[in-house]
Picture 1: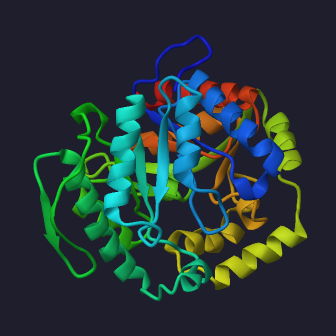
Picture 2: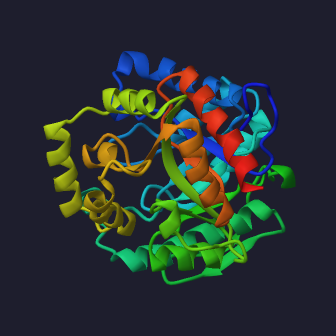
Length: 341
């Protein structure tokens, strides 16, 4: 990500997030995706997360739209094993590389909404889904290496002498991200040498990963302005109380076995005291799936610097509502990098 004066923030790797089709009218969704992708590229983001679940349009089609309307932004595509065979994922990655010369990232997800999984006749338990994810991703990684035919005989997947064409250039091999909020997710990330993404606790409550062999990142929203009052006014106007959203959130808690979902829900009452930039109100009103940091540039930058100081160097931001919002976030990230040195 870059600051307003275009200084490169070499310490951090930053992704934004694409709009969800379920939250935008169909006649404006395509234009909205293109706008957010272009804003994100202008702001210096490495890439942009594209969600996947039963309620959304296909993430690979959204990724292609993003690639066709930007010059270097890398789609971070959410990949759920129940949706497609690992060969189909590898074929999609290499096809995009062949057609556009663009790298993508893979956000490997095990699936946390049990109603979605049940509709697809998938009753696999939570930890087993991560074991399946390891097999699934391993086949994808081996295919994309292009070192020859791939054979794999696992509990969930078996392939024999499987070849991938066209081959993917080495510089386009995707980075892999996996949720690291549960023990099973962290074990999967370790097995795959993937970046472990967490939905963080307040920075002072996070562990120190600076000496870890693993790479870690966090998913977080940011609202920052010159003053505390201005930032909170913007945040509360963007995320007003929504009783329907609160009921939907409560229902989601009952239909999800996701560890991060439960962890954030339990932290809500503990952190909602007005004395911290850490804010879960948008999550509790079912407006987003990550915590927010709200406050003055200095206050939020100080909190971000603590995460950086604990070894988090990849940040996945929430969906930016405007181009200007990314400019405010750039100010904070620049200050955080300086404070973390």
